Amino acid sequence: MSYISDTIVATATPPGRGGLGVVRISGPQALSVVHKLFRPLSGGECPFEPRRLYLGDILSGKGGEVLDRVMAVYMPAPASYTREDVVEISCHGGGAVANLIVERIMELGVRHAEAGEFTRRAFLNGAMDITMAEAVAELSKVGSPLGASIAAANLKGELSGKLRELKDSAVILRAEVEARIEFEENVGKLDREGTYGKLDELASEIEELLGSYRTYRLLRRGVEVIICGRVNVGKTTLFNRLLGSERGLVDRTAGTTRDWIAEEIEIGGVRVRLVDTAGFGLALRGLDGRAVARSEELLGEAERIVYMLDATGGVCKEDVVRIEENINRGVEQIVVLNKVDIAKDYQKVLAEYSNNIKDGVKIIPISAKSGQGMEEFNSALADMVGISTKEGADRIFVNTRRQYRLLRQIAEDVTSAKGEIKPVERIEVLAYLLTNIQEGFEQLLGERYDEDMLEEIFTNFCIGK
Ligand SMILES: Nc1nc2c(ncn2[C@@H]2O[C@H](COP(=O)(O)OP(=O)(O)OP(=O)(O)O)[C@@H](O)[C@H]2O)c(=O)[nH]1
Ligand SMILES: [Mg+2]
Image 1 (cartoon, rainbow, N blue to C red):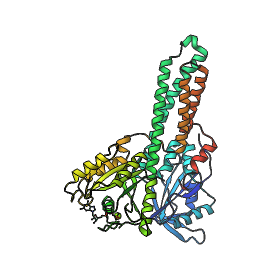
Image 2: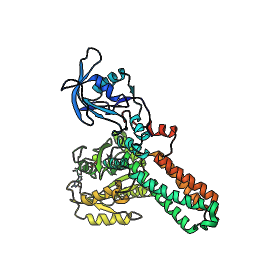
Image 3: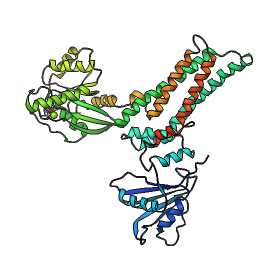
């Protein structure tokens, strides 16, 4: 099926400063319009052999002055992104020149593309299924390398492959069940145990996909890790070490860090916002008091904490209380005992802390200054923020809210379907539910869609995609 359309144009690269900008034109007039404003360096009319780059000038409408020297390439239908005739023009700089070129092309009667319209056409023309189209939008938004590689995998069709597999199993079940409605004499009774088992399998596969969305969101947003502890224990020293730069001031006086400071780092492909805070134990008045209040506020909302203890003092009751509070709140927490390089008897302090803290927390001895113990600490940190060890790196991920919502609906129908086999078999209801399940998968894959669904998906795109 071919989607008949007019010709559209937009800048495909983001606005702002940049080395290159790309203008994309798609539709039946793409080539004839470009002929009108592109003058090849070689002179004459540009031959525009498919998929060959041509160097030349873009001419303005009035007086034919040169707007920019560019490279242009023609990709005839159907071997293009949209499966229509496409011309892409790479021009100089960020948005400004590209916008001039877009304006010039619009003067020649081409319409400006709406958000996501190129990809929408690619989908409608069968160049990709809907989860791939969604992956295109995700790819342009994700901030972490791991998130990007997941979106890229879905662009290649990893998610749709899985969904198709699940859909096929639902289709087979449906056929088996429906056969019993009219032809039970011929085909025999439904294998109840077997059908139940297959539904159960389907349910757990869906459950796994649903779980993957939570992980993906985490990857997309990144995670926050807060370093806290009493004053002067070495928080900023650790912070700087993790950053690999002297970002925060370190000093032997207590209360060096006042306002919290945050920097982004990357751990195992995950974007991590690392926050260094003002230490506990300062006076609760004036600037110190405000610094502590800020730390408390951050801590109240924190989901991941590195709690730092000092090996050079004895056990501090306040630390024990705070660590236990964090445990009770369900915070993910790494407890480190710092300055072991100068504490002769740190083993004793370590043991004492361990004995004092309820529920037994693992405490990692480190020296933020000398680097001792950092290997163990780094791997604990990677575990806390990462998905690689916990989740399996080559898992398939659901990466949009729409996919998640539809999968949830399907999961509910699967649960209901199981209830229609045991304890009492109600074959008509079962057939109805399996039809729903199948349709759910069809929607997920974009084999079944309506205008609202396309709106929801493509309005989230940026212009030019
Ligand atoms: N020997 C040793 N000294 C350390 C270590 N970590 C930090 N220090 C020293 O301890 C002092 C305080 O370090 P900071 O990193 O400023 O401590 P902080 O917890 O950020 O302090 P506040 O910002 O005041 O809360 C400095 O003199 C550091 O050089 C360590 O592992 N070993
Ligand atoms: Mg500090």
